[in-house]
Length: 170
Image (cartoon, rainbow, N blue to C red; front, side):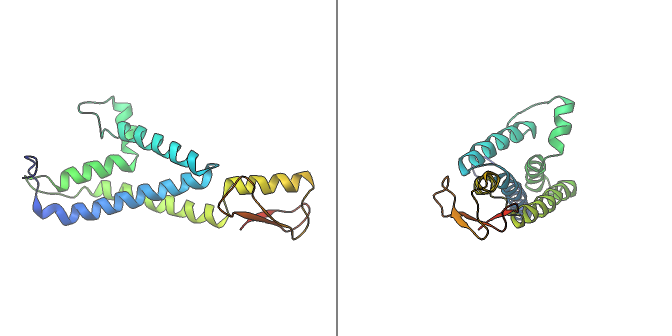
C-alpha cells in the first residue's frame, strides 16, 4: 500500500518487462524521428509534442469516455497499449497480460527498428547531408574533398565521391 494504491505484487515482474518493452518501442520511434529532422533541438521539440499528443489520444491523461474515432486512432499507438497493459498486469483482483498490447508494442518496435537501420545506414544526418548536397549542386565540391559542416559543432563532416555524385556524412 503506497499512497493507498493496491497492486498485485505477483504482477510486478511482468510490469517491469512490459515497461521495458514499451520504453524500447517508443525510443525506437524517437530514433526514427531524430534521423528525419534537421537538428537536435527540432527533434526534442517535435518529439515531446508528439509524445504529449499521443498521450492524450491514447487516453493516458483523460479520465472518461473519448470519441470512438479518437479511441480507434489511439488504439494504433504503442503508448495506449503500454498504459493499458500496466493497468491489467497490476490489477489487484488478479493480474493478466494484455497480449494484444504486447503484440502492438512489438510491431512498433520491429517497424521502428527496421526504419532505424535503414535510415542510419543511409547516413540520414539531415543538416550535414543537406549542406554537402548544396556544395555538390553549386559545383564547389572536388572529387575526394572532405569538408566540415559549418552548421554543426559536433565534428560532423562530409566526403564527395564525384563532381556530380553523392556526398556521404562521416
